[in-house]
Image (cartoon, rainbow, N blue to C red):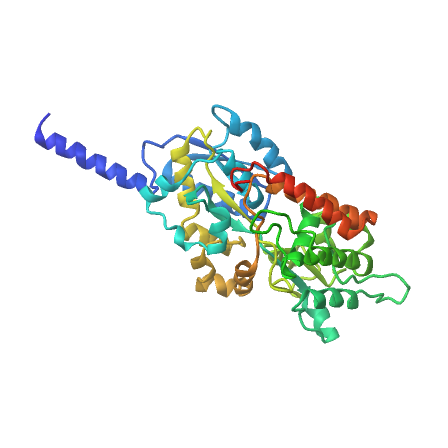
Length: 426
């Protein structure tokens, strides 16, 4: 082979490597199809709308399958243990991180990140700590946040001359004060708060927002459960008080959809909810309270930190193409566009972008929510921990179980849960 031909081939090889590192479509991936599993939420819709651009730029075809929250985990578990799974990219909820990492089901991304030059420093630190690196290894890139805060009716607060509550105690009292019989017929038709108190992730979140804001945390430094301390018991007593004196009677059967519908219909003054909810409540096509709702940091300062991350399963058939997609969808340009469409970003530069802030001025509030919020601890039993707490919380709120007894039983089960966990060291 001549010197010139060798030089030409070397040059072409270097160009190819550079294109791959930038996530640019090249013939090596042209015609590849990747499959992605996602949750049925608005941020998924925004990604789907932008997919034709990625497919045109790279030649990679993308199939997105959407499922409900509960169904996603059930679908994923058999895929992880198969020699080759069906999905190239998945989204991981914050409370699955410890389980998926501890079981070695996720492909480390550090080599891809280094080769492509992707800057993980653009993420809000709290998001990357929850949905990025675990013990120094990067397994995910944050996708969207669903951090929780307080949504409240500005018109009702103004009419009553009320300020947004700053403490948990004020929050409970304001909710009860805004529960009224406005028609004078003896029936409550304005609730101070709408809640999701059915057994599941919702009732856990309702309790945890108050628990955190009262200074509580799940475990101490030695991984002994602390949910049955003064903060935990008081948060549960507050939950019972709110249900009995400020929320709809049917709230013990409410999940997120039922809780939100009460707010949309103008029947409640407040609800503790996810960051992305404000946009839909202010959409006149979907909500009767559009223009009369705002969002604030959870009273007490510490809401539930929520979010999903992008990951590549170890069983992915096309990991290189999967990374090209993640690199593209998390680029500043696409992340900003998703935010402008109504998505909930995780990148600091998107939150600070003038165009984004002009359209969504309340994003500065959401940034404050994220800064003060707390996630679940990262260990293999996090999802089971939530189930344990949901059971005991439900029995206390709906069935009258003593709050201290309920949380004592939860703590005992939580102590058993961490024994032998590889991310805990007990």
